[in-house]
Length: 83
View 1 (spheres, one colour):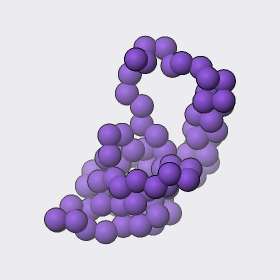
View 2 (cartoon, helix red, strand yellow):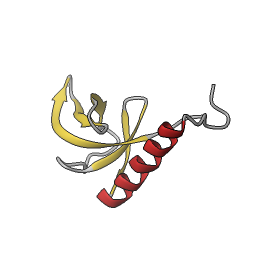
View 3 (tube, rainbow, N blue to C red):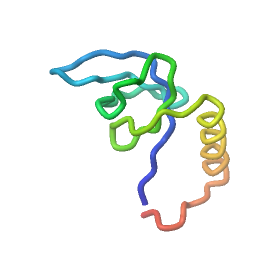
View 4 (cartoon, rainbow, N blue to C red):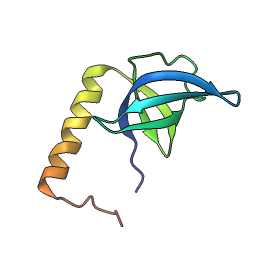
């Protein structure tokens, strides 16, 4: 099972000709490629999967998704089909 996680774009820059971003996953900051999202801007929320921004979310949708993920983590529930 593959899972894309919402993250907030906190920095945009170019690296070797690629549009890149620093994204915040609720306190964990990582680098992600934004080439698939040329319209992304600072403060946007995006679904990130394996280091690539795939779609832009509105803030409410991102917050609801992050809350659901927190609840799953708090329960220690294993996601069906995960390894």
